[in-house]
Length: 112
Length: 114
Picture (tube, rainbow over the protein chains, first blue to last red):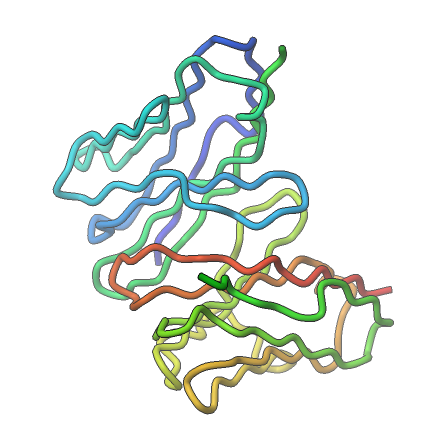
């Protein structure tokens, strides 16, 4: 089955800095890669996603890049704000089984 | 638009007791997922339904966990008997279909097994 590794587990930045979270996956058949933000005690919410036919996608301060050859994808947050503090999860979904596999999460702390 | 509903929000039981969770997905969503999220980890898929059929339940501990979605809408997840290691948040999610559509998560049920 799919195996998703996520790094780092904790990321601490100053307000205004950029943050990068990286994930690798094992199943070359995976074709959908969503990123979720989960605030303490709340449900995960989709913030951006990318499909395997695209190399990069951007939405305001958030961008995701995908390298299919290397089987890794990354989340980039620019001009971080304290409200960006949360746990971020990457996930990979196989095109064959549609089963989503999540990474272990990155706790992002943005210091004012 | 109403979101995914779950109940109860919190449940505390003793080991070896039984517990059931309920989920009502977003109207019209064919695919329903149950996840287990242990503190400090990402959600782990337990079972995925497409309408009232099971797509995958390979990670469901079938000796103690069961789930059903009889009419293709609401779903229940049951644990019988519960173990200490079942303490987690149980998240229900739904999507229009399973083919790469966005999943919408419910608020979760926090289970504590003493």
